[in-house]
Length: 97
Image (tube, rainbow, N blue to C red; front, side, top):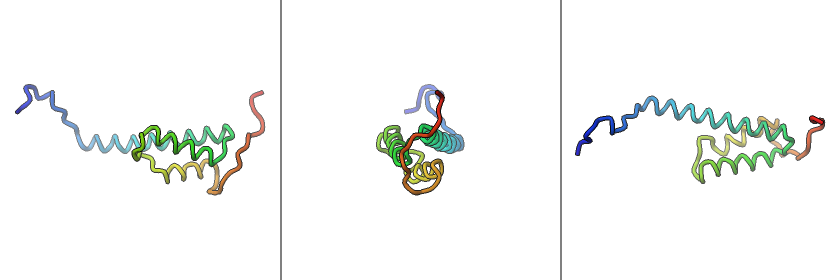
């Protein structure tokens, strides 16, 4: 049966959908990088930051694979925290007081 009005049927442009997917992936990657950098500035350890970012991704996408893969999150944390080895949790010296 045909729709009574043509505007009631959604017509999506596949080119726009692909462009939006790419932009969405860039946005999520930037968000993970910003969160990792914030945790680093707050003096959190690399392992704690990694666990928290993985937990955030699981929460955000409810157990489904999000646009940023687990290996990508690990690579971002390693880059932000400098190196691939485990880090020691510690508080940075200095502060606002």
